[in-house]
Amino acid sequence: MKMNREILRLALPNIVSNITVPVMGIASTMIAGNLGGDATQAIGSLAVGVSIFNFIYWNCSFLRMGTSGLTAQAYGAGNMHECTNMLARTLLVAASLGALILLLQYPLGKAAIWAMHGDAMVAEYFYARIWAVPAGIILFGFNGWFIGMQNARIPMYIAILQNVVHVGCAWFFAFRCRMGIAGIGYGSVVAQYLGVALAATLVFSHYRRYITRIDWSAVFDLRPIRRFLTVNRDIIVRTLCIVAVYTFFTAASSRMEDKTLLAVNTILLQLFTLFSYMTDGFAQAAEALVGRFIGARDGDALRRCIRNAAIWSLAVAAAFVGIYVIWWRDLLQLFTLNNPASSAQIIETAGRYIGWIIAIPLASSLPFLMDGIMVGATRTRIMRNSMILSTAVYFAIFFAFSPLVGNNALWCAFLLYMLLRGVLQYLMTHRLHDIYRQTETE
Image (cartoon, rainbow, N blue to C red; front, side, top):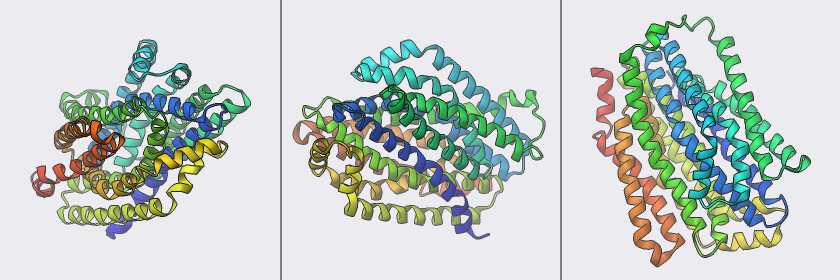
C-alpha cells in the first residue's frame, strides 16, 4: 500500500470540503461588509451571530467525530453490519437533537443574543438561520459515517453543493430581495437542506449493495450504545471547551474600547480558520486511516500513516506562513472592497497583530493532527483532558496579561492554547505508544 497515496486520497477531498467552510464565511463577511452603511458594524454583528451558531454546531459536532472513529474501526474489521447500525444510530440522534433545538429557538435565541451583547442585526440573522440547524446536525452524522467508510469524496460533493448554494442564495436574498443580514441566514437554510437531500441520495445509490438490512435490536443494543455515548460524552466536553474559547474570543473582542478590534479580530480569525480547515483535511484522513488500521490490527501501517500525515501537516503549515507573510494585506482588503475608509482602518489596525496569525500555523498543525489520531483510535478521554487543561491555560493567560498588553494577550493565549493541545495529547499517550498498542490488545 502506498501510504502517501492513501493519505492524499482522503485528505485532498477533505481539504476541498473543509476549505468551502471558511470560504463561505469569508463570502458572508464580504456580503455583510458591502450591505451599505457602517461596514464595521455589519461585520461585527455577523461575527456575533456566527459565533452563536458555532456554539450550537460545535456542541453537536460530536456526532461527526464519534461516528467516524467507530465506523472506521468497524470498517477495518470488515463488520459491515455494525457500519450500518452506526449510520442508523447517528441519524436518529441527529434528527432528535435538531428538532429539540428548533423547538427551543426563542428562549435559546434570547439567551444567546443577551449573553453576546447582540443587537437587532444579530437577532435578524439568528432567527433566519436557526431553521437550518436540524439539517446541519444531520449532515454531521452523514459526513462522519462517510469518512469512517473511507469515502471523502461524497462529503466533498455535499460541501461544494451546499456552499455554492449558500453564497448564491445569500447574495440573492441580501441584495436582490433586500433582506439584509437575514438573507445570509436564509442562504444557509436552503443550502443545508439541499445538502441533506444529496447525502441521503448518495447513501442509497453508492452503498445499497454493501449496507446490510438494519437490525433495530442491534441498533439499540446497550453495549455499542454505551461505547457510542462514552465516546461522544468526551467529545462533547472537549467541544464545550473549544466553544468557550472561540465564543470568549469574540466576546472579549467586542468589549474592548477600540471597536475596530472586533472587526479586525474577526477577519484575522477567518484567516486562521482558512488554515485550520486546510490542515484538518489531513487530520480527518488520520481519523479514517487510524481507525481502519486499528480495526484491521495493522500496526506497521498505523505507524507509517501517523508519520506521513505529520509530514504533510507541517508542510501545509509552512506554506501558510509564507502566504500570510507575503499577502496578508491583500487578503484583508478583500473583506471591504467597497469601503475604502473602513479597509484602510482595518488594515492599519490588523498590522499590529498579524504576527500572531503568521505564527499560529506552526503552533497548531500537529495539534489538529493529534485530534484526528485520537478520534480514529477512540481515545476521546485524552482529547477531553488535554482540552480542559489547555482551556484553563488560555483563560489564565488572558486575564493575567490583558490589563498589560490588551488585544495581544488574547492572541497570545490563543496561540499557547493551540500548541498545548498537541503537546499534552502526545505526552498523555506516552509518545503515541498507547495508540500503537491498540493494534495488539484490542
